Image (tube, rainbow, N blue to C red; front, side, top):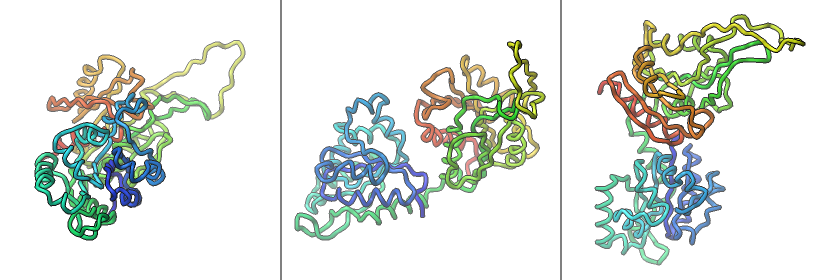
Length: 405
């Protein structure tokens, strides 16, 4: 079983069992998860942040008031990034502070800001675990978070006592998480999803072309998220510098006409078609077979452009139309008005609109901020967040378009 595609925020609090968290981080990464460690001040007394950076490839986060991180609202970024928050070890102090709703360090602040599910692996002295106050906190946290409790185990403890309170072994924690995700039924499990991504290039001659600034990141993030949730995904990509997401069938194309041909093959009878590509509206009517030379005395070069196929409109009108067709509206003004118009005019089920006049989101940015409009007059505003996180939020919206099983 794999944790491929899961983004796990590993919260480590101050107990001797923190030494086990190094092996836990290694095993989580080996199982395919992306791991971001957040350490309390107490945890750093037992093991160094540098250890986790070496194991996960990401600097461990330790400070709430970090000037660099806070420029991007660091705790909010972490909270939105995670698909699961795993607390291991979770000390008696951490459980008490969680139940009280405190936000006195980075870890507890992230817990309050995150909507991700929580898994807790307690670790403390057997008497502390058995104490009525701790058991009341366990009950309270169960009501507040509905977490997955993993352990504690019984056995010899560092203090010399014997009993329940030992943190579960890292391998057992990883297995519990694998079983959790294996049991979770996704709305996308077994569904067929087709995604277009990136720009197209329209040849002028063998060395020149017309294109745009699309990086393909949003489309690739959607393909990755759908595959992680169990869908069969076909990704039709224009020329980009991105790795193929795990479990995704990729078709590389160059021009809008190439993309349209691939879409006509892949889209029929799909459950979902997402047109995230930034397709060139026009192409050169007669591209040259040879490189065109600059001509002395001529300050102008006139090109005749003809319209490209409208891929999203064409897919929405196929005989074997996908069950849902999603378009994107990247606009620089009147974003909402253009989005509603495009939704109706192109017979779409959903349209994802964003303002690409902003330099902090959209093209060539890791983040995006969008509004989704639906054919039943739905509207969902999704605030700025990493595209990898936004993809899951968008799939949650699109899943609403399927009838209840």
